Length: 176
Ligand code: HEC
Image (cartoon, rainbow, N blue to C red; front, side, top):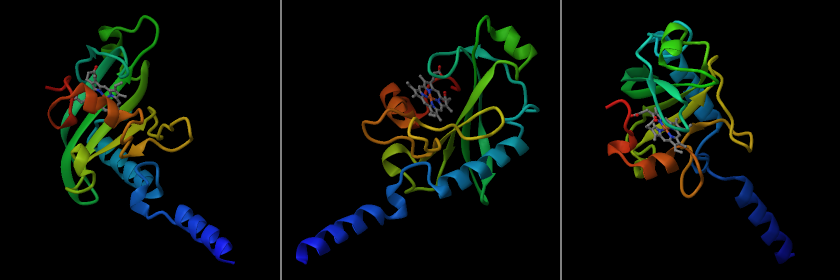
């Protein structure tokens, strides 16, 4: 009897994790990422009609040629800093090919948006997201959307690499 209860209690604990225990890919993260995408589109920082800034040669994993935007946008009534990187790649891609045709070689947008204090205080409160050119969220190998605190601890992901790459505020190098 006690044994059974113990198992039931353990199962209940395992299943009923508080929402905050999920670091990324939750419904709330996906909703937020969709709102962020709309704000970015309105500001013409993503999408086929985005502002065509000068491309430059970059490093893995962000694509051989990149475009970077650093500004502020409002999401859910809160205005905060956003960094957008358009990642371009493919055979024979170079800076002038991307400038002339900014959507042809586009692989993904990687975005950092500064959330409210306490969202992820260990990691400077950034919300991380990766979208395809149409604005759909990319997924990790386990099928979870890349949106939120992606990923903490030893797991490979935006936060792990940006922490290792250093840089003030986990912003890295390119948009300085
Ligand atoms: C393996 C390391 C690594 C991973 C993983 C990584 N990044 Fe980066 N990121 C960098 C480096 C290095 C730079 C700067 C140099 C460059 O882009 O070539 C950068 C730059 C950026 C920038 C431009 C900001 C700036 O100040 O330069 C954004 C935005 C960004 N990353 C978002 C993301 C997101 C979102 C993810 C996850 C989906 C991610 N990064 C995963 C290493 C990484």
